[in-house]
Length: 244
Image (cartoon, rainbow, N blue to C red; front, side, top):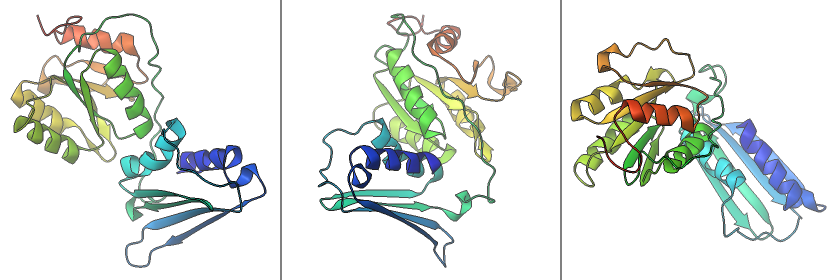
């Protein structure tokens, strides 16, 4: 949430109410029945607001991070008289309910034209939206035709089932092993059963026991294209084509 407030403040200072002589009203309340936290951001008396035609990184953070990371909601309305944003954080995500986990950023910028996922479809399971955005870009840099990103075991299993009855199985999956209070082991079990190749990503070093799934690559966070390519090679992907 701190990152969302930071982006809202930055945008208000550059383009919104705080760029002129306007004000920002920030309020919050705990809903009595659900215990959810509702945060309201309302800008007033600044420049006339127009909805942007392009969503940049900051806007993506504001609109997607709370729904993606916490399962909450985010609504942003570009009223002419001032931007209005309203966020709902589920009770389970409020401080004291669950311990926060620290994630490293993915330094994915690298040179080279190796595309082991060329023309293939990838599944990315990652519960941090910031890392997920970088992960999507990394997999596309490796040639992936499409990247489906989900934050939870339930969503991943649902997407796998939907692909089986529609477009066909994923060609590759990258699984964040630790997903909040659970792990991606059920997803790995399902992928192994279907014969879909996958790798784990973890921020907890190389001590992950993957013997239940055979010789599955484990990538340590933070990782880059080099580490992803090495995992691809171990799984039998070759540049620009399918498995050998």
